[in-house]
View (tube, one colour):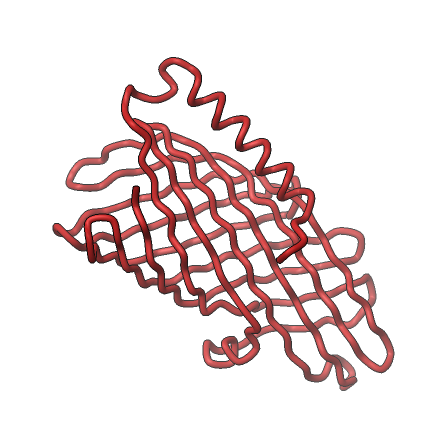
Length: 249
């Protein structure tokens, strides 16, 4: 993760400019102080789906039960951040997952494959009070992808990569169940043929307030993308349980 793809840099710079502009415009946020939170999650996510590195090349399938997904998983992590002033909400999420496996591809040729996926989601929007301890954030933004793959077999060895940016629309709903317990639900859709054909995401966590500014979370997250360009095809997803720690400020 030391080399940051250029689409990530451009996207982050664009959001920084947008954030500064919104903060400077009268009425963009109410006259309140900024607040925020940062969440660090461990994500038991492996890649499921089909990966074809080049047109006519071998197809490597990652279709596993949870235990098998974790066996294929080399590493996964995501960090989520949120800043708010009044009803203005800024949201960011960085995701990393690396998986590898070996097996047979048709017609029975041994092959080994690796797939690393990075995504950076940046969005801004407005918070609505739905009553009953529930808030709804309506967001719009982008998700930048960087996908690196490799397939090695006796007849073909290739290592394609793809970087692209998708527009997204998102909803983030936080429901307070008691003084210390809450449920956070997040869903987004995007792509629409701009970068990928389609991408979507769902995450749900139960959250416990351990201290004034410390929350513990557990839940499930699913992030999918359907991408095809220049003979490279990836139709798959990262999915699995999450455990996280949130600091608020």
